[in-house]
Length: 218
Image 1 (cartoon, helix red, strand yellow):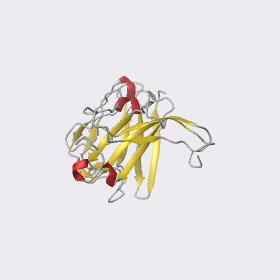
Image 2 (cartoon, helix red, strand yellow):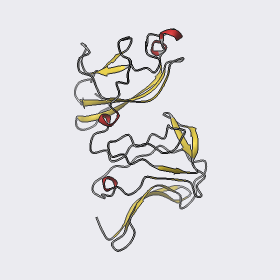
Image 3 (cartoon, helix red, strand yellow):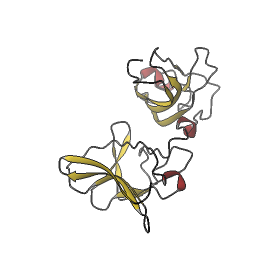
Image 4 (cartoon, one colour):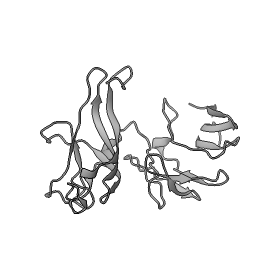
């Protein structure tokens, strides 16, 4: 509860990440029965009857390395929020994920960049999958990532209506720059023609990160 500021958080995606020997498959000395980890699920109750939506970024059967996101209906500021992890049900043989359910309707696009192949899949129901140009697969802090040269490599997520709104918004990205170069844009959304606008997060100087919007609309 001490990590939750101001107000209770609703439909909050919690990252479950780590190496757990008991989440190896039985063949590898663990307790998970399905080779793909399908029997790993989360619930909000100790009886295991209220399943929580979750997304699997990756699961490694031999080591018990997991990267998963779990939608917690309410994270409280006043009491600790408890969720329950379940595994070992041999009757489960298909994926229990609900990927789009993890990311509520306010999320317009979520790109983990963990896939080695194009496109950059959007985890939300908006399906704003990105087309990757040049950026190669790389190791990331949470899971996979993409390595950009800063010249002509990019991920184009299109111009669907769901990401064409400049109302109140939050944008976030995990980055690790090798060098800080003026003009490099981390995130960019623009509109061409009359009434055009640009929304961007970029470097304006080698030591400064800039967030800005310009244009005649919104």
